[in-house]
Length: 196
Image 1 (cartoon, rainbow, N blue to C red):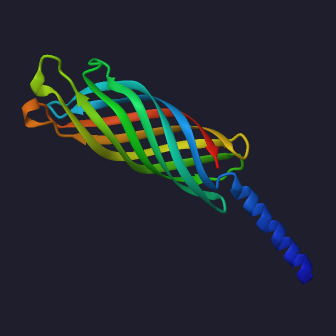
Image 2 (cartoon, rainbow, N blue to C red):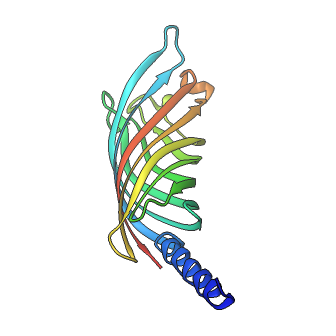
């Protein structure tokens, strides 16, 4: 093989690699709709658990870098709505979530499955009606894990879905006379994004 033909082969391979990476490289932004489940577990003896449900809409921003077939990225997602204890709607609820994610994906062409870890921040609001002493709000951070996939409709638009789970621990004020609360908030999200 001559030098010219070798150089031409390298140029073609590099161009092909850049083309394959271009579907997932770079910044992106999008919208999401999420449905939630999970439970609040109160540290009584025995532990008392109350199911959670709710819906939120959100926005997210991120950036990805492709390395051969792997895609590493960071993302910030903000969701707002209502996630509440099913037996006590409007009394024990979460009204927003801020997720900071580190994502690792696999470039499978137009599909990219990925896993994620990170931190999540939320606010637990407790309103007990006439029981003024039990009312409080507390902002807390927790551990975030999840799985998802993106589908490249074309070079700019993507559709995807994501399953996430978050763990929080809240310590109510002494005057509220509530034990430690462990919140597990799970979500399934539909996502649409635009790559810049």
